[in-house]
Every structure is written in structure tokens, then in C-alpha cells.
Amino acid sequence: MRLAGQSGEEDSVLRLAPGCDPAALALTPAEGFLLSRIDGRTPLGVLRTIGALAPAEIDRCLERWLKAGVLERVRAQAGEGPRAAAQEPPRAAPRAAAQEPPRAVPPPSSAPPARLALPAEDASLEIAPEVQRELLAFAAKLEQPYHEILGVPKDADERAIKKAYFALSKRLHPDRYFRRRIGAFAGLVETCFRKLLEAYELLSDPQTRAEVQATQASVPDTTPARRSSLEARRRLRERVGALAGAKRATEERKRKAKSFFEAGMTAFASERWLEAAGSVRLAIAFDPANEVFRERFVEVQRRAHEERARALQKQGEAALELRDFPQALRLFEEAVHYRPADPELAARAAKIAWQAVADLRKAKELAAHAVELAPENGAYRRTLGLVYRDAGLAANARRELEAALRCDSNDTEARAALRGL
Image 1: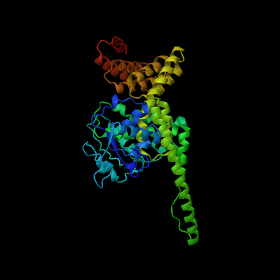
Image 2: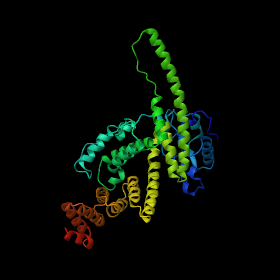
Image 3: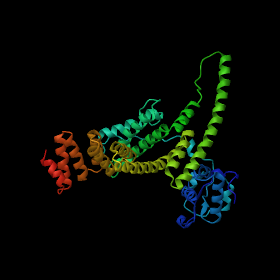
Image 4: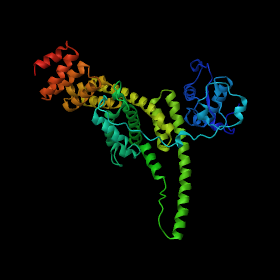
């Protein structure tokens, strides 16, 4: 049963056979990733672009699984495409169904993005009104160029890009609102952060930034100009030539993007998160309109950020052992940026800033971040209160130390500090 080269096969749809247990199969990581993409809706042509294997190898895997009864074809009703067919209840497809290929369905990269529905402000939610307004304002510029999304100049350097991203991610990261009642803003937070992350990662890396700029520059200017008929014909020939050249360049960039994406998915299946993130980042840079690449990017990048945070924390611990406290603070602070929803990490960085470096401004910022993430943790409240005390802000210190005692009435350090105010 050959899949490649047959009429209509690009649009055919496969699904797991009833009763098949994927966990019982002996699969390589790349094969496991491919099998996880088979959902009874995705056409074969799209599977060939998102699998962690070369297209020919994907065909061989699918043929083998079909023969072994692991997969089955989704039968399409007459005149309907694979999306409609995927809604049918599971049942064996008769041979006659294979004779009539389903109607072509465009890959996800060619579909226009759905218009984002913006929620209304809601004072009853557990998300501050000013943050709601910030999210709505941020969502209004999601289709703008990356540097405008980050709020930096087009020629901003890596340091400015990172600073802008870290400032925005503190407020827009979905993990910040975990277990909070934020209603319709939940989807908006996720969408905004995905775009923020994409903008940061593609602009902060010199190679992908160059490719993004090359992609933008490759779009020809087709604005009509009022000229003489001779000049108009000449301009028309030039535009036609430019469009043909741009089409060839676009096709070549898409081919490279697919190659990068496949390499990234192979690395992802093998849990090489940083390598996977770099490859998928390049795939998006070469083909920024491909929604499949963008959809996978956030998951890949979150794993990569977790790995970066672990590495930075480990380096920070080593710097502490060497008593290089400024370096330790820098490393811990950057780890917090990559893992912004970890209150213990923020509290640890706050203590380094307060006790070892005497940077009360940073200590206050980090301790307040930990308290915001875990307001019922008395130890975090106590640290913030002691920082306020040393900064000479007695009223703020009293407020936090009293809150620490409400969380833990046996906190002798907080009680002693409160008596000393």
C-alpha cells in the first residue's frame, strides 16, 4: 500500500485504529512524535511537514502502521474533505472510498489567522484592571513587526531586546495567573505571551533576526504608480519579474524552513530542548506565515527556557561558592526571567541582592515578585519586610512583617523585627 505519488494522497487522513494502544508499540522518539500528530483530522500532506522525520521515512512509517493495523484511513463522504470526514464515528472504511479522493484542504500555513476576540474589562476577575488594559493594548498590536511588539527601535541591540522582553514577560506570562480566576482573559494572556516570546526569540538571535529582515525585504512593492503607458508597461514588466523572483525565493525559504523544523522536532523528541528551539526558531524566520511552526514553537521554547533557568541557577550556585556575589545575583536574576512563575527562585535571588550585594532596589523587586506569586508564604513576606526595614520604609516593613505573622504566628524573626521598628 503505497502512500507517496498517488492522486489525492496529500489530502488523505489517518487515525489510530480502534483498540490500538500506542504505549505498547516499540517506537523511536521521532516515530512516537509522528504518531502523536495523527489525530483523524490532519491531512497526510501536513503530516509530512510537521513530522520529526524526512517525508520518505514518514511514508514508510505510515505504510508499515497501516499494514500492521495500527492506523486506518478516515472515510470521506462524497464531496467532502478530510475535515468533515474526521467527524464521522470510527468504523472500517470500504475499499470504494479510496477511489474518490477528498477535496483539497490547504495546509495550516496558508490559512489566514483567526481574528482575535478581545474580552471586555471585568473588575470581578483576579487580574488587576491596569493589567487587563495592558493586555488589551498589547493584543491590538500583535500583527505589527516584532520590534514594535517589544516596544524597541528597529535597530535595537540584544541587550535592549532582552530588557524589553523580561519587563513584559513578568506581566504577560501565563504561569503568573495560574489558579487565578481571569475568565476570558486566559486565552488572551496565552496569545499575547506566545507572540511576545516569538518576537523576543527571533530578534534576540542574530541569525534569525537577519532572516526575518530578509523575509520582509523580499516582499516586492506593488503599489501602482501613475505614469505614461510606456513607463507603465516597463514598470509592469519589472513588477512581474520581481514577483517571479520573489516567488522562487519564497519557495526556497519554505524548503529551508521545513528542513529546520524537521530537525527541531527530531531534537525535541530526543529532549534536546535548546537545539530544538534553535531549529524551530530558524524555521519561523524562514517561513513566518506557517502556523504549524508557530504553534509548536511555544511548547519547544518553554522547555528551552526551563533548561536555561536550570543552567543559570547552577552557575549562580557555583558563583556563590566562589563568593562572587554580583555574578551570582546576575545569574539568579536572569534565571528568574526564564522561570518567572517560581516564587522560591525569586525569593532566593532577593536574599542574594539584599544580604550579599546590598542592592535593596533589586531585593525589593525580587521579594515583591515572590510575594505576588505566593502571598500566603510567610517567609517571603518576612524577607520583603526586612528589605523595606533596611531601606528605611518603616510603614511598608510593618505591613509585610504583620502579614508574615498572620501566615505563620511562630515566625520569631518576623516578630523580633516588628518589635524593633
